Length: 41
Image 1 (cartoon, rainbow, N blue to C red):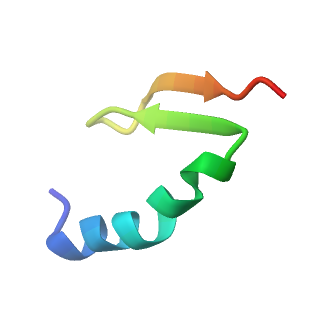
Image 2 (cartoon, rainbow, N blue to C red):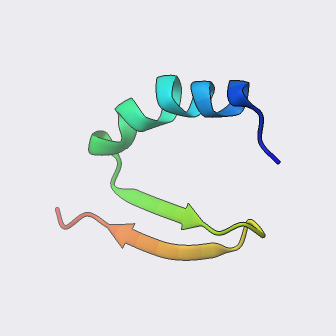
């Protein structure tokens, strides 16, 4: 479904910002939210 370019963009743009995020939503194959992670501040 996703091409190699999508994974490259994910690795370059989203993954490096993850440690700074206060809220992380993980989606499943049907784009529904599968997991919610909230950082304790």
